[in-house]
Length: 78
Image (cartoon, rainbow, N blue to C red; front, side):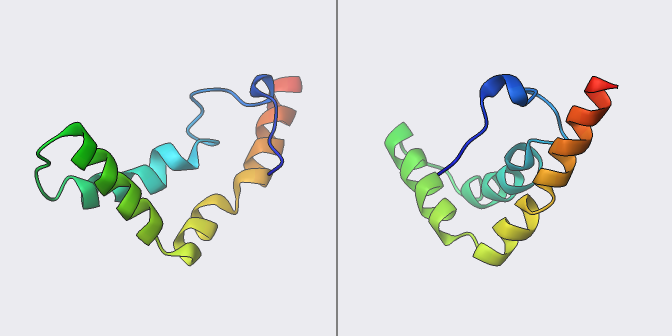
């Protein structure tokens, strides 16, 4: 998988962190719906829910990323 170097992406930009503001909220809701007996159980639940995410949803949540990244870079350069 091709990735961008860390200096290219601001670490806390809500415009660029789709996982923080979209997908993670869905995971939090699903995983937090019930108590976990241990950290291992919590991790297993997160992994299970991650695998169960609808591919269409993930794709739509991440699709605008490139445009937002380019706009952010252009705004930062100007």
